[in-house]
Length: 247
Image 1 (cartoon, one colour):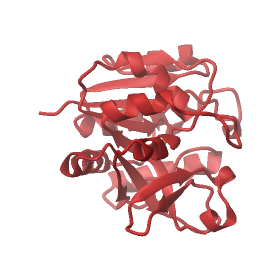
Image 2 (tube, helix red, strand yellow; image 1 turned 30 degrees about the vertical axis):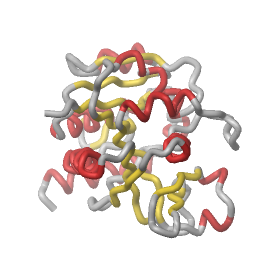
Image 3 (tube, rainbow, N blue to C red; image 1 turned 90 degrees about the vertical axis):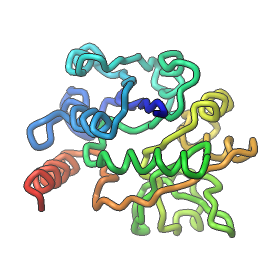
């Protein structure tokens, strides 16, 4: 069986949540956000998980299940830099690496499995989870070519008015072939509106090197929700409760 590993990004402070608590430790429907994410990955068949921690890592690390490893991102220079910090924790020869966020408790196990299946079916170097979005959404936009291929992902702050009109957004969940991911991360630059190393830029880098990038449109309502505010936390809790009740 192909190996299936995951890198979970959980270094952020979550300033908009209020207080001084690590964002991934806020609870939705009775469990910390990070616990929902790790549970879904485990249910999807992931056999090795590395969590990238930063803000108050000493509070988060003890909450991680036995067998889940962690690395520190310091300083915090963006999502691409975060994954790069985890590079040495993954053995050479891995088949698939899922990258997801520790504040996205609604991503279903089947979604993770679908990303992996699609990558292997197509032999793609990367597969990105996308979602249909309204015009006012601040998700990064998925830019496609005339033939429908994914060309690049443009973060909202860097997007032109024309790009912001695109109704397909990046949900922030990926499956990579490690042989394509690691070299691409080394080529990232921080010349953007936030002066950060964006993970999304590896899409353009992989394609520029002759690689292929595919996509899966989310089929689970609301699973793209990332918890950034108390309102988001409430919505996530309600959705998880409804899911548990079979609604």
